[in-house]
Amino acid sequence: MTSFRAMTLANFKMIVRNRTALFFLLGFPLIFMLLFGYLFGTGETRLSIGISGEDVSPLAGAIADQMEQTDGFTVYRGDLESELAAIEDGDRTVVLAFSEPDGDHALDAQIYVNQANPQFAQIGLNAVEQFLLQSELEIAGQPRMIQTDVANIEGDEFQFIDFFLPGVIGISLMVNGIQSLSTTFVSFREKGILRRIKATPFPLWQFILSRISTQVVIAVAQTVILVAIALVLFDVNISDSYFSALVLVVLGAFAFLGIGFVISAFASNTDVADSAGTIITIPMMFLSGVFFPVDDAPAVLQPIIQLLPLTYLVEGLRNVLIDGGTLADTWLEIGVLALTAAIGFLISVRFFRWESREA
Image (cartoon, rainbow, N blue to C red; front, side, top):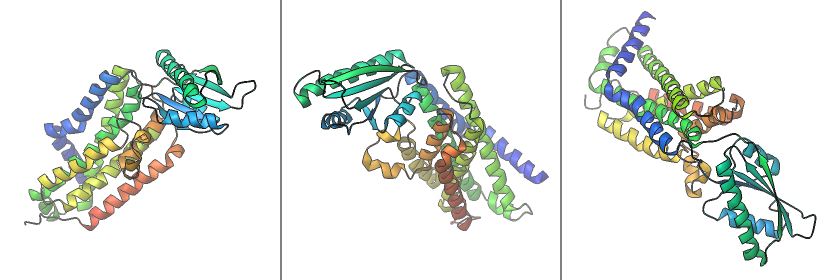
């Protein structure tokens, strides 16, 4: 174990002394968080509207359909209980609940407003009330067909930086696992380091394990630093589900390390490894819900989004950090990340090469 500790320490020293690697491991995601945090940190991500009871009448259904097609609204449909739970969690600005009328009106509508951000809540309430009035004229042909009532709900305060922080953590783990590891391992192969290790009594599995251990420790350190900076600079609203978040971070690190090892197994040189890592990470960064909710993405992209491991890491982290979820609540995310890691390591072991193809 002395040799293993020595190799792990040597890996740490190599990474710390590599300024380029340090920038991509910490500087790159940190710049992202500072840039978007200061630009949009206290802003809302969207005007999200929950609708329930749209099946009580054709008028309610028509209004729901029209609202869904209106720019500026992100509409979610569900039963009243689930939509009220969503507004309490800060995931809805307004919930519009239709019901059978008690009086002479054609329809009753209860409007629930999230008062965590009063200014934005007022904007949402005004927008919904104006929309209902316009819809009455367009669909029913006369005003005052809908009896409305407003109820305020003290939901969780939700800022863009709260939404964005798990995405930044995901980006840092992805870059750490895919680009950093793949180019480093291919470089070791090109420089003959792996060949020399093969000729020594030092087991290959210990060398690989020491590198994995180094990358996982760095991933956890990255997460702690990013969360600390977000707390100090932006006063993010996160839960205390730290253990659940740690489990997801470690599994996410293993998942992306597995992908990084696959790239290193097939890449012929560092240029190929770097290009392959870029081709994988850039689309994943923009399609995995880092910058916007995946539900808002076009339907044609949804199958692709559901195949990306970063999607599950980011959603899992949001579940535990923002919503206070437990590991049981993130079983799907945990399963996908663990499966990604297992498949990646199995493929890389099968196609592992000690030397470059040109050798």
